[in-house]
Image 1 (spheres, rainbow, N blue to C red):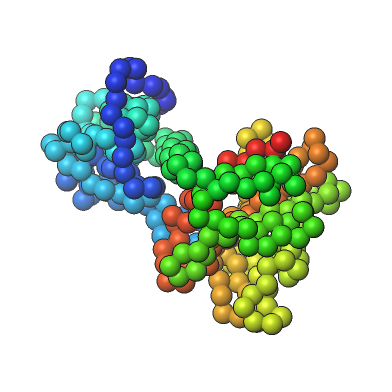
Image 2 (tube, rainbow, N blue to C red):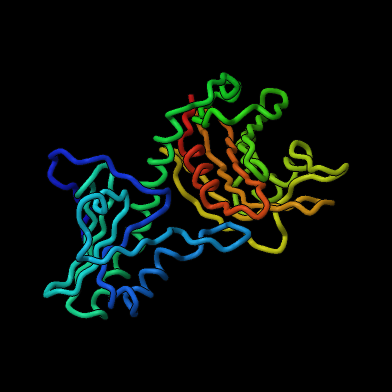
Length: 305
């Protein structure tokens, strides 16, 4: 099991929709237990959405037709039954940027075994590849604003975003409209003295911020963390900073509105503070995976000045 770069000769530019993987595999394997396991791993539920959507959209490409432009997908899984048992990840094998996961096995059972060994590493490689791709697309048309300087940070937002609300130079809310709603980014700071971060504290703080800063449509309504579903909570890193990632669904007190959110509490020890960056989506009846990938790409563009 390894991750390596392909030889550094010329490669065409990769292509493909965001969070899509081409699966190169013979039809009998795709329709059987091997295909089922691939779908279980890579089409598992995208965490934190109110309606079920797959982590990745999978496109089946029969092995015999895998040539030409079909090799230019940004994310590829190649599966074959042959005389070796192996699995490895190669960057930029046929195009650039590109992640290619190769899984070989003498039997169907061995292919599934190899897949399970590398599944977590492979999913992370594909997710990171998509974040980079989304950031690259955002950089083609970036919002020019100095508003983030008041917080001592920089975030790269698409030009469609606008400053929607601010408070005391300490809280900022940017928004872009969609056909059915909006995608939102809010940032604010907290003192380090709030103590150790856990899920209950994140929920309590974001609900209090929602009450004072993110009102709903009706008088007395405001955004809170949805009570019916426990959010996903994970300690992680954002660049070199310790951070806490929370993702789940929000609702509005005294109104019928809901949607997904992604929240980061980031320990900024140099400035003696917790920096909070959150994105949330309101877009009824729309699929929301693409919006949440956009939010993740924006948050992970963060620079502390």
